[in-house]
Length: 310
Ligand code: G3P
Ligand code: CA
Image (cartoon, rainbow, N blue to C red):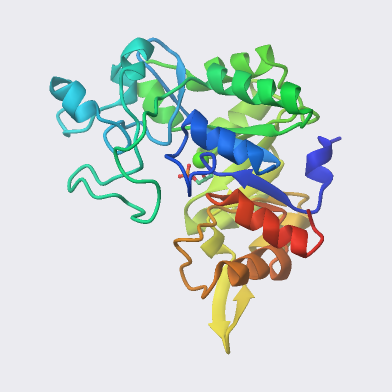
């Protein structure tokens, strides 16, 4: 039996928080997302040198922080600065900013929160869970977490076991089964399969999908995962006379009992859509997805409310 949220017809996942409005994965972006009432708030996870899971999108630090000026001599041979080379105390000294290209210094989404303004910091998974659980207590809401195990192979090569550390923290905070308000996601299918079959986790598991060939492996994914998280373009086929047709991905997944939570809906990056409304109508209604990751939870929720689906 699932957590009640997963029985809802549509769920909204705040992707890196309300990251369309505030720098991604900051507690400020999480607070803003929380106030918008999504079903889940996402946490991407990477280990520090001293084994603290940090909430950050990449194994690198140099596209969302001032590490290159504060710790100029700590870059690796590839000129990148790695989360795993810094202790939690060192990471706390960094200033976090809106995502930018470290080669040019240019902001990736120019109309978002201004680069280098504000006073944002990195934080741990434990800090974020306590923040969300604290808000759940003070508001009486019950918003869930949606952590992602990032690059398990990279961690293993560095002699670290991110999954083991994360599963222990989740269990300590009461996230152990599908009834708990947590969904665990990973792009690495071997790791997710291990989480279910060897580590015997009973959490709700989402297999993220990056490559086209993985869309053909749903039968295998269904032996360990409860759902898939594809790139939304893998659901779309052609646009003819202003209307999209679809691949069989959603119906194939549904036949196997898998939920479908595509990424990432951005109001400032619409791809082939002419409006956010069209994007929402096409994916949530016409393609029948079960939920989605968005940098703009307020806009998705407002659309679903209008359709009486939220
Ligand atoms: O995890 C789903 C979504 O976040 C897509 O992946 O690269 O943004 O972590 P990414
Ligand atoms: Ca993610």
